[in-house]
Length: 392
Image 1: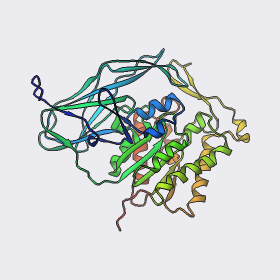
Image 2: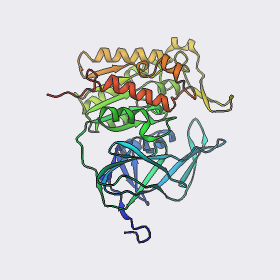
Image 3: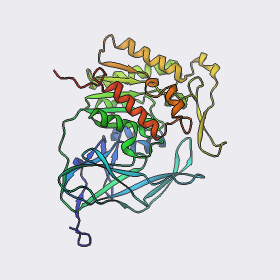
Image 4: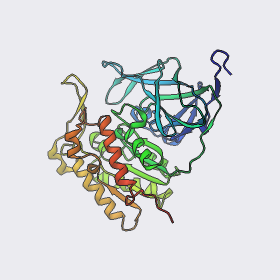
């Protein structure tokens, strides 16, 4: 019991956390990871190493009568050399499923990105801080605190004016999702309003979000992590990072997708599995990568630098990728009736782009995330959708 504030201090243990695949004990507390240690040992670049440690979709879940909640954390924040620092990451506190309060944590470690393409960075240590929430409703309640989706976060302790215990298991279905920076939450403002979180809330499922900025590249170690993770529903959103990194040609991409799905099926032979193609992105609809930053207008935007004529030699665009993914599902579904395809244009297409254009030419803004999450829920969790709740 804290004599200064009369708050109960509760160290955070694994049973308070959801949405992660691994926990690393640090000198301060626990660092949630979204890839297991075996996979992390095979990561080839700093971009994915940072992305998987950013807790997109990770949240604390506990039951309490407290009206004051302090969460002590040590954040690690990214800044890009030559650019103003972004605002501090937001912690969303939900009471019985409703967003009730928000907070930020000042200070923390600093990663200064010195090379935009590789995410090479300089590390500067900093102090831990506290996300402070007051005026919460009285009485027993279930609380979730969603950690900042783009800020590495070591969780240390809860300090509350009432006892806490891990939230009871609601026996909801577990949705395991893998995707790119859009699934990670790029350009969303709050962690509980990235599109997978919104779709999960609408569908009444528990989210495990393996959306990795710049790194949905059909990596075998990610497929093995998905294979080994218990899940009731699985989705894989592929394409944009393959194109914008110019990572594969047609010859390599087709077997890579088959291999990714084969690996998942080793651990989940009959689980509903949804393959999702890219949303509309005019930058890459007909132009291959690589993608490059464009600062000519005074703000960070992106442009494609490939030659459309080289698609004849196997370079990929989003229109080509969508056709490939649809063909793969059509071929495999004859023997795998639980494999489904969703065209990303049904999540965000031309009319959506006209209304809600991509602010940086690649990622949707907050309203775009809301639109994608709503469309996904209506198409996928609806009664006739691939993730519909059925009873035997």
